[in-house]
Image 1 (cartoon, rainbow, N blue to C red):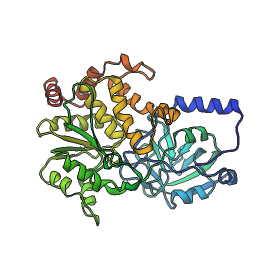
Image 2 (image 1 turned 90 degrees about the horizontal axis):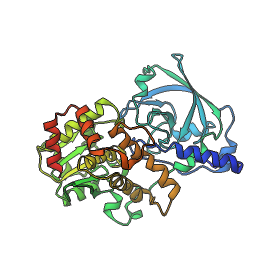
Image 3 (image 1 turned 60 degrees about the horizontal axis):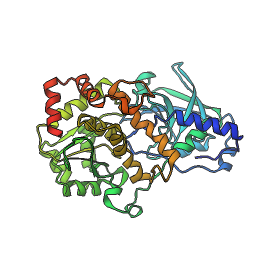
Image 4 (image 1 turned 45 degrees about the vertical axis):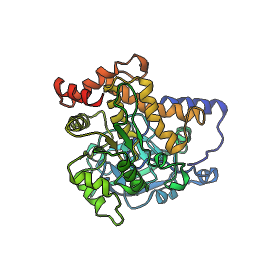
Length: 397
């Protein structure tokens, strides 16, 4: 990311206050490979040409069905005069125009808000809604569609970009243990049955170089059933066909019918998400524990599923927050002591999980939320009966 020319203290303070108010960030895509690139230099930002423009085609992003800006990598896009933290105008050839769209290196907007994202693991810049619906369908794209992107304002969102920017290594040597590297751990809180529910990075998708490690830890933990939030049956088959696929234990669970391949996007507020996840929780009751829940990083989709699990087990809001934030300590070294501003900003993610469960407005004190009742209502919204919800609760405690 880019270091911008100096702001006045008053403007910088205002920008940082705005950033903190937008703390409901972070897709993952994620659970897509979550996220961010190192900052660019100040010289690079000031050298970016004003009035930068790109005219090109679009490609459908397959995992979440969003819009990729075709014809160039993220680095090539930035070389045209764009930089993380800029404001963009976007025009499609069907006449639709989007103005003042923030361009970030991660999903740093509130839930449902539009952004352009140059996520490090992505092949292209994507136009998406954070935890939202498909932009490909929303804006009526076809394979023949064209897009024009122009610079609206240089560095308008730089304070937010710098506040949220995160990066981590995909090399095992940079972590102190396998469990930290694979983000593998038991979920704890409330009345949840001890050592029966685990979460982790993907044990089968190796885009983050963690699959073999997570697969090994799953075998050591004796995992018997898996809720895979990110892979569909077709995408899982593609993974197993890749050279070097090393997840034999996991694949054995798949072949035995002990893995639910959900293929979910990150829009946990959507009815389709609620239905699919609720049905997976019910299916879980027909299998032996221990159970593993994962997406790609084991962060956002997994974070929401584990928040739902913990709420059903009568966990407190703080227990759910603590479980979610361990991931940020594992991947990024972010704790309340080490990086308090980033820690506080990231809390917006898990707060929104709980507001979603309880259908509560943003800003409601977390300790006042009826979490268990909210989680039960989420399962009802997903189509489960009261008897089925009771079966899930009896299974997990």
